[in-house]
Length: 146
Image (cartoon, rainbow, N blue to C red; front, side, top):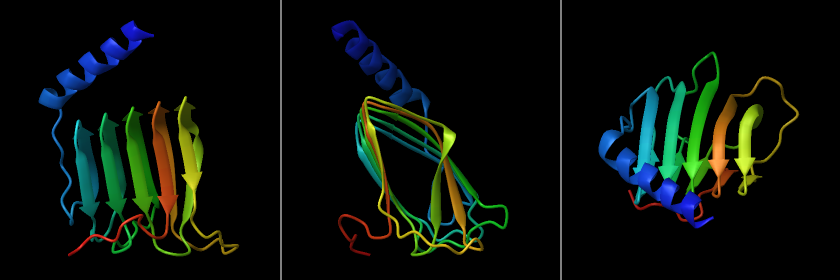
């Protein structure tokens, strides 16, 4: 177990120096990286296609309540290792964890308000959450000051 932790820590250290974020409030397809830190993005992209979120030993708050979803839907790829991702979506959106979302010794919580309407924006989530967590909600745990 210690060897696995040391390996994960080494991987995260290498990734800290090799990976860079490409995620601004108006970025249509994000690449958000948080390693050994916390990151927050309040997106207002029009349209918003999704992208990638990487969190290793860190956390991400991704607020999508101001975006205009792409007509094709939104796809979000997660890579979470001993970290967490909180996703905030508008009321009525559907967050779908695909069969390609692997949870390993971690958790996924969907606290969005379900709707029976089929004509609502759909956010598809896939990727890996290992020893960490992913939560989707319509209200952030803490309202950011803007």
